[in-house]
Length: 124
Image 1 (cartoon, one colour):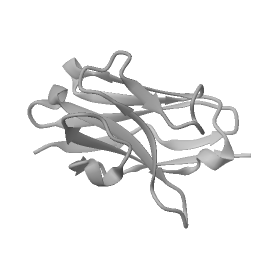
Image 2: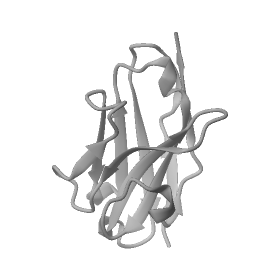
Image 3: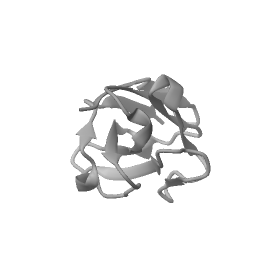
Image 4: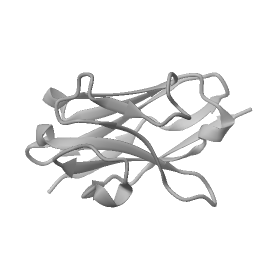
């Protein structure tokens, strides 16, 4: 079992930055690939970024955030991060982290564990 708790959301002006954190409890965090997803009001949940269990260069961000968002992890702290720069109003959503054993995935139904989400609101 893995429990995930996101933090770091809030209200920010367009062009600003936030860093989301996802703290994991439970054993073997380093064996899990991690993903970030988001859901805007009235829209389906969408993939944002993933990182493999080992981190490093094995990361990927969706095109809409590429160059602005960076995913990283610290296995010693059981935490995955999403650094969000140059935020836009269209980034407004509830952001969720998720964990899965094995390889990375862009599909939410591939993930086994989910956090409760953290709200990010970007004002224009």
